[in-house]
Image (cartoon, rainbow, N blue to C red; front, top):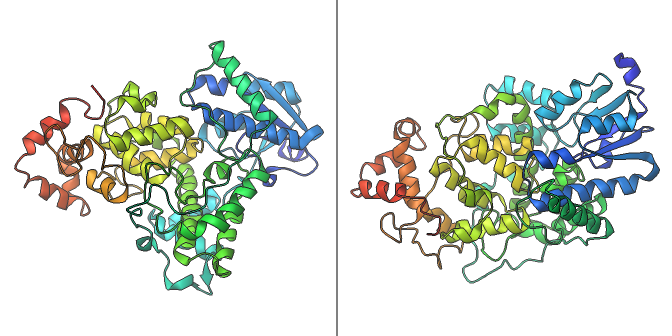
Length: 500
């Protein structure tokens, strides 16, 4: 069937991460397919499965008679039951596999992507003209192109990046930040049915999950997502910046927006998020460093990851520049926080187990740092993050984990590996005080697994790291360690984080 005929398709297909109004097509009958096979192929976090199904079913309820909602084993079966061989349109999916699948279906016309500020072809033109892939330059390009936080031709406040103002350690005496609690949605009959369905599928052995499915923490429809955005901008954005990188054991949300899942489900559009933040700054309701930090995450980093995913291509997932091939241990794969002695790792694993979410510093500097030091296979680490986080999708995790967290691409998108010892965790959190290990010790029974692991990582890759100006100093420090042999024995004798 020709493209002209397909453009008149009476049916428009919504994937489960295309749930906002900006994904609809006027005058088209909507098709939604709930594929059980998706949950059979991977062992997802239970809260992630609940959120996805709840969001899809809420959207179907909103669309009413306009939607054909099909529960099927596969997308192909569901599409056949929904429309037969009738022409269908669909907006560009968010993974290489899904895009390849829909392009193989002759009846389907693929429309341009929605839900992002920058299209992949525009990113390609920028990358060609820039001659490199530096996020800071891309971020400035987006700010200019979309007139975000600009005063004429200059950035508001005279600086593009206020990251140096956003690295404060948490307050010394506070167990939680002195900020209002985040927006909390209320479950309804749809959530109860989703939970009953998941329970039934598990009892029958049809699917298996990790993690816990407590009360839903993240929006499942656009009305909830918009309330969450308004609550963040009004109550939490003003304190977001300074403690953006801080960690408190008893405060899993800190001042973060908790909107990534809503954005990645398509319930929110990034333009409305950054515009709301800028409006708060212009109205004098939020300081520039907080607003700039949030806009950099959404219009900078999120757009950068989306576009790198397509720019670098499907073979990027095979990157393994450091030659790491160790398997993920069973306790990590099962989110068994009780099997871990290091308090930072145990606390973070428990938060992932209970909520399917932690913010970017525990992801990078506790979970990712640990995997990097232990030499775990980067593809397996990427898959773990994809499955275990409510906001995790292939396009999100592939460049974030392969490129940034695990340095598996050898520095294509970052200038150094994000490996650190316990000192960084101790400085930016309250996790080290009651821990069985000491962040300053690298040998002995109280040696911090992150500190010992850091020096073992530097030793293992010393030749590569000596050639990098950002890590060469660490290699020189390594040569001055009089107890290096003991450090290496300590780091290698067993996995030092697993409880005996």
